[in-house]
Each structure stands twice: as C-alpha cells, then as structure tokens.
Image (cartoon, rainbow, N blue to C red; front, side, top):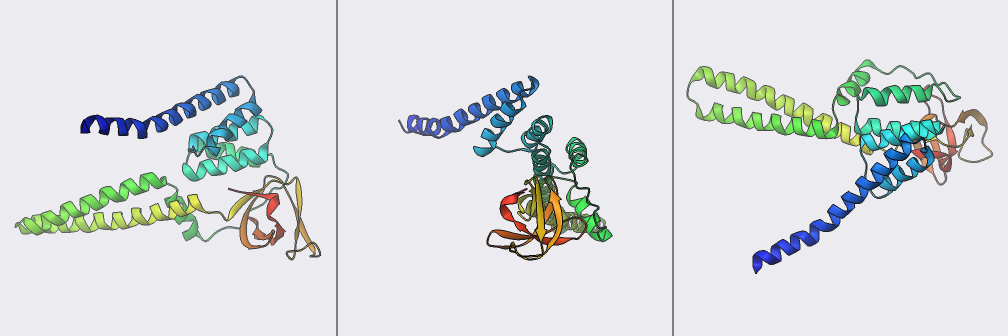
Length: 253
C-alpha cells in the first residue's frame, strides 16, 4: 500500500512536468514548421510563447533572432542574438549573425579599445558557458581531494611529491574555473546592457526634456546603462559618449 502511494505521488508530481514539456515540444515544432514555411511573424509568436512560459536556451533565442532577422526586425534580431550569446559564448553562428545584423543598423559606433587584460579576461570567461565552467571546477576539486589523499596516505616520498604538485595544480585550476563560472553567471544575469528599440532617440545632457541635445541614436544600438532616475537612465555607448534617455525606449538584454 505504501509503495502504491509513493508511485501515485510520483506520478502526480511528474505528470504536469511531462505535460508541460510535451506542450513545449509541440510549440517548438510548430514554430520551426512556420519558420520553414516563411511564416516568420507566426513563428516569432510561437517562440515568444515558449519564453513567456519560462523556457529558454541559446538555441531557442538564436532561432528567435533568425526569425526576427527574416522578418526585417533587425533590432529584435540583435536583442535575441545578444541573449543567445550570453548563454552560449563563442558560438560562431551566433557571433556571425550578430555581426551581420549590426551592419544593417543606421548607427555605426566605433568601440573604444579596452585594456588588454580586460579583453583577455573576457575571452577566457567566454571560452565556456556557466554549466561547463561549473563542471570543470567540480572535477578539478575532486582531483584536488584525490591527490590530497594520495599525499596523506602514500609513504613513498617520490609519489608524495608528485601528488602534492599535481594537487596544487588542480586546486589552482579549481579556483580559476570557479571564478570564471561566477563571472560568466554574473554576465548572463546582468541587467545593465540594452538595445535601443525606439526608431530614433535624442540623448540629453540631463534626465529631463530641458537638457541639451547631445547626439541621436537609432534602433538596434547597444548601450550600457550607467544610472537610473525615475523614467530616465544614463547610458554609455561603445565609443564612450554618455547621455540620458527614457528607459521606455530601451529593451534590456
């Protein structure tokens, strides 16, 4: 009787999850079918239903970007490619389509060169996703413990030296992987980057309409949000220029 109750409880908990996964597969199949039929607006709606229900992945966001690109909605394509790249850094297809989309927007912003250490750090961080960095740190920690046990319990001096050296190396690798996993997680969850969604925006010198006009941005440009005051936010673009614009004209990546 107890076993029957346990099985019933397990089915009661698992059935909604399985049904939800089945619905997601159906919606994804419909979206892919609509995309192949060049029904891009309908495909985008199907993809959006999945994201609204909490389903997300680099592949799903990449497909949404492709559908938006085919639908001539370049700003949305850039947004979804940026989101996909955070989940799957270093993906060549995502990077290529993102760069291609950027060539089609009005503003061509030249980025200010970064300090080489920052560029190097980002490159290493983007070698793997959060999950890959996490697994790497776990395995390095296990190896550290294993070689630590060898060092403690093996009596041969030569073996102890080798175990100690490899253990220290594994610990350093663990620390590095753990650090980059944290950095990658913070990068995925950051909310200080956005895409301009308004057709054109006049950036002001202060957070009000009476501020001086500094420059104009058009849809599709990526900005970094420096500060927020009520309905305004201070933004910085890649060339270092700063100013204020309304938050409603942006969509956070």
